[in-house]
Length: 387
Image 1 (cartoon, one colour):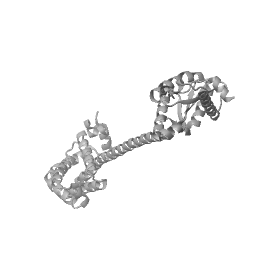
Image 2 (cartoon, helix red, strand yellow):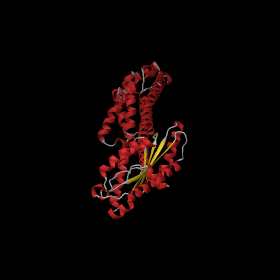
Image 3 (tube, one colour):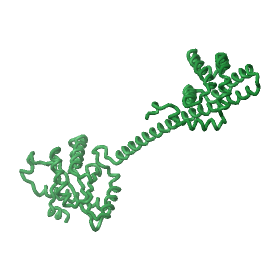
Image 4 (cartoon, one colour):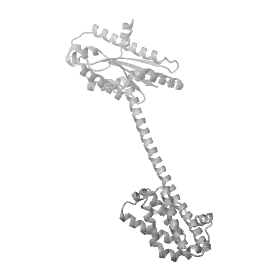
């Protein structure tokens, strides 16, 4: 059930048993009820003067006058106060009475009446009622009984009013806490998101979107350690764009950047989700492939890459080197990357040597010149070049 669908005493879980318990705490007995009822006719005769005198004194306090504010509000307060005083001598102090007292506390809290001002007002009201008692009741014992009964009932009322004060304050604190927690969670989420973005930016090459070389060593070491635990092979592919400096010098750096982006995109589309692709430097790229043998990297990645790169680039060729480590003996990260790099350069030298030794008319026709692809492996040529 929504809070707005409950009465105040339902919200605060005040029952008839609780009411009787509170009356007992202040020794508020049937004799006190009778004493108050006996004074009811006199109060009814003097109620207007009591209320007038009460607000005359209250509005003389600047803080209270500011809270009241205008004549309409004052008129409503007079009506409410008249009803409040008459209820004190009504002789019925049940759930409805309690609910009205709780509401008084809630209203005072909402309009900003501080506890000191409320208690001061209660004291003023009691003094005005006592003045009527002293003036009208000739029997001192009867007057004393009425005053004691009023003291008990007013204290009973004050506890109810302060319960609403406290409950309202606790609710405000809880609401503020909830808002603070939500704000903190929101900020934490934003900080986490921003931190992740910054981490990604710090790990990503801004031109190609591949990982940058700063995290290559760390990533390779982590992958090799995981592979050792699982006894799995790891392959590394090293790529290089042939004669990229010459292309940059003749075609311009913007065209060179377009080539690098196209190569990076082909790498992304040709690698597996578990692979890690890096821009090593200028026109060099490095791919770490967990749980992958050299022959698998050649058959799968190289084939797919050639198909992708042919669709986007002409007049460009690439050289590569592939090395494998594991699943029994493992190179460290530096050694593995260095071997792939050296194999790529050996491959590049072998390809150039082959081009120098094989000059035919078909090879220099425009439609067959420098097709964009990775050079196919030719072990016998590499062997001669290395020797």
